[in-house]
Image (cartoon, rainbow, N blue to C red):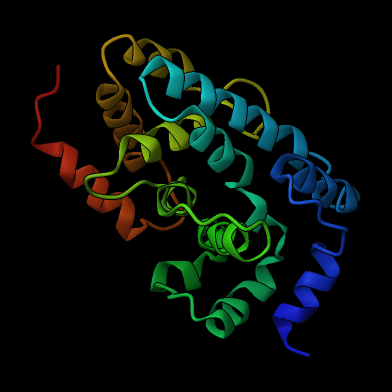
Length: 208
């Protein structure tokens, strides 16, 4: 038995149907005691990602699926994340060692493929990068990231929400640039290299 066997037995020990919506719901229900918010958050983000995908003429089903699975890696406790990542061959950056929460996107993508059978590289990438994005992000990655920020799992209304929603009226890239700048200038525990890449990518661009 490996740590991953223990993780699957503890957090994903439900009968799988092959229907990703039903299977994610079953996993969330099984973990209701410790993650009561998770199903509602995943479904909210999935629906928002689909809405944004329609608005910007992207693959709505891909956006929904990525949104539905983007935080499934959050089931893994912080104290297990470094060891599990190393066991699974997931690269761990210094910033992720300092703040293991930052690994949840990588875990979410891994579980999406290994447990839920997602094979699309575009969907898996959107899941992986949903927290910070990275340089030259795809439109699907942008939509899933920003859907997560619109339907955040914090208390109350996000302080950036009105400005973000207004930025969408200009373009998807302007909305993305707005949020990357906001996040980059926030009081973060660490500055993830992907966020720096994303910020630098947009820093010298004049968008319309």
